[in-house]
Image 1: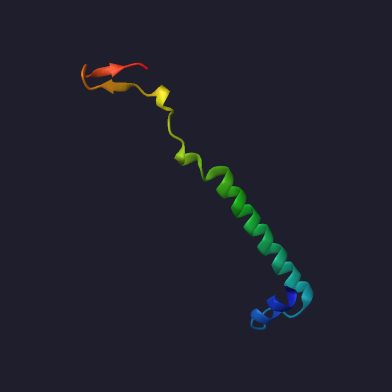
Image 2: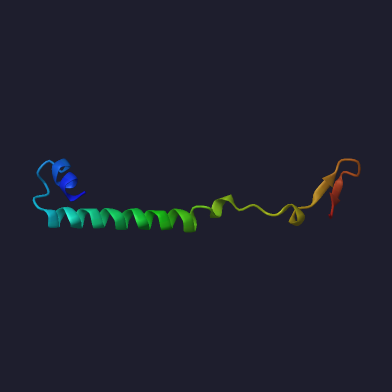
Length: 66
């Protein structure tokens, strides 16, 4: 992997130590992004349960508790 990073860096990364640091930083960033997505990404999809919301009976035209 380090050789590939050196090759693809267009001369910015000179040795294997620098390539290892770049790979480590990349892995840490990806890990933190995944934690952010899994921990906080699904909060907006929470909806109230059907039992908590009153239903409207179309024949009575008023809210009715389940």
